[in-house]
Image (cartoon, rainbow, N blue to C red; front, side):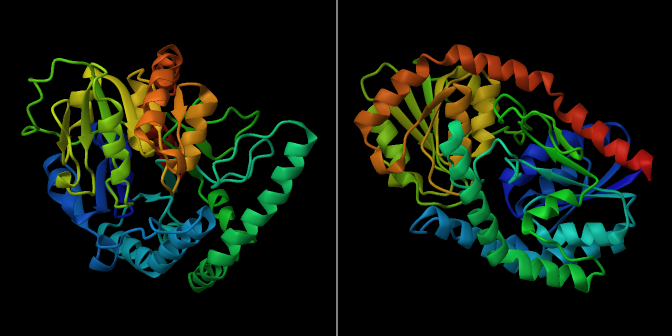
Length: 408
């Protein structure tokens, strides 16, 4: 069968959603080689892949938007970080292609240099994204601000102005560097940075309607396959058998963004409610929190192990945990801190499967009220779970990959 070369960004939240698809491709007989975060190499090799670590320049890269003063400054910080990685992304994928001589390439949406190397290789290739994409769709508000979809002439006018402004900002932060690298690799210039999404023969997006906005028509190269909810094998996970009350799972980001206040607010908000609060500290030190008798704070717990026991999820708005919660039919409260989390939060609100609380208004009392309101939305969360199942998941995504191979 074919050899498929895969390169991810240095984040578990970008590798794990892809894993079910890679396992499906492996099981169909394809040889899958993966260049990814160094901490995950042993696990991938044990699962039958040929994995290697990204270079130190990429492996140690972290987003630095957590202390930005406003959403535009945060967007600038993220784009500047992605742009700074471009030469390393490009060189890394070129090296992988030279070493493995693959039949096809798969590359992460956040690796701009990887996309350029993939297109320049002349091989069949596909882009994937674990989160929402900055599509320029006529019915949508400009991407990145977490705005509600507009209604009426005034709303359409707002979106038209803001969409033009956001496009200008994306281009100002990254277009020059993107085009310089494209020309260096024998490719034509783009008019806008977001035109990168028009270049891949196939784009696999790990989400689905109606969590993602419903559109009249999607781009021809885009395939919504539903969430990738894989978690690593967890043979030595924490023993939570002593917890007999319904569980409220609270997640902080696995990439540092200074969101400790969410975990502590949830612990305080749910005290005396009859629920046991389990906080996963993510990138934070568990000793940061004051758990009390009705809460447990952990470095990590397998979502597969704990979500079936949960009554609700309270989250920073990471795409992974949000879609996992909804896949289990669980209502969710999102308190977005940055990155794509405001877009995730708005879609939670729009699809009716949960509640949203701004960090500006985060107090135990307000969070308690949001939890109460979200609990009444479990029926809608169940409908989202059924829609995710219908999207096809890993089998759909693997079919897209094989279709590109067959067209070569």
